[in-house]
Image (cartoon, rainbow, N blue to C red; front, side):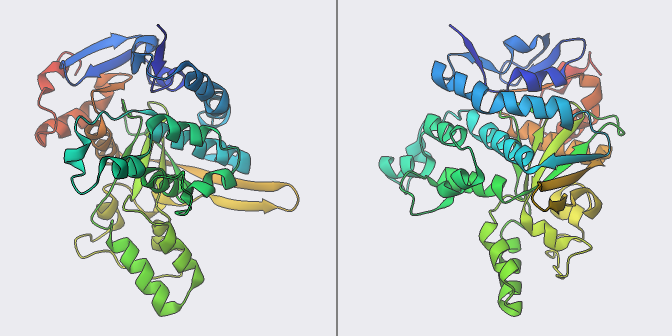
Length: 348
């Protein structure tokens, strides 16, 4: 029986040290060095056809983009419109490819019938195949339409999150703390501004009658951003379009909630410099380029994002070298999020 990887091996290889990855089992409280074939995988996790579609319809394209362009860039990264489509499709597949096992969905959603739960969540395999079959942005946008009977609310929410977000590339090369990767492949963050950002945008739209603000308000979800590790030193952060309104060059004067005195407190990491959207260059008749600055994170930023990733893990997380997530482990232990700190003593 074939093993299916819910984190693809072309990603895992970038979290290896001497061809091995440090694999952390949360249930068994075990840490060991493994090869990438044996981690983040399960026998017959996907049907054979879906396994083949994952490879042919997105993984091959994104692996080429990752290895030949993204990970070879140091300061700025130029992506074409086609590159952005491949990237966003890959991120959407990442969101949907891990199957959350919920033992009693009726208890989790007591207000919904079994049929309503199905409509709300959609089928695991169908959601994945819908994304994989999309060849254009327009193909994806059709699933955001509420009147589309084949669309479920989970699909709508994550499509909005990824398609309407802007992409930020971040690097940990200069701070000494690596990224780790959880079994779900990513983590989302909802901070103190998750609802207030919608209200603030809509209020400002009504005051100014600015159509752009109405458009941005229609794109917002409770998520502030999601972080997707690509290697031990690089990740993608998909930012809510709301945060474009908070940047220095924005004509809008968005005030932070009273609980947050700065953007970094609102987001848990970073600064206005680190969450700038790509610069867009439209070339007449020759397409569009997106120039992304690769922002350097400090240790405090890394600890916050890694802690978010670990707490989003279901059973496993992995890294290249435990010594390079030392501050993350320390912070998790001090916050009581990690009760098995001693397992790492031999590595630290």
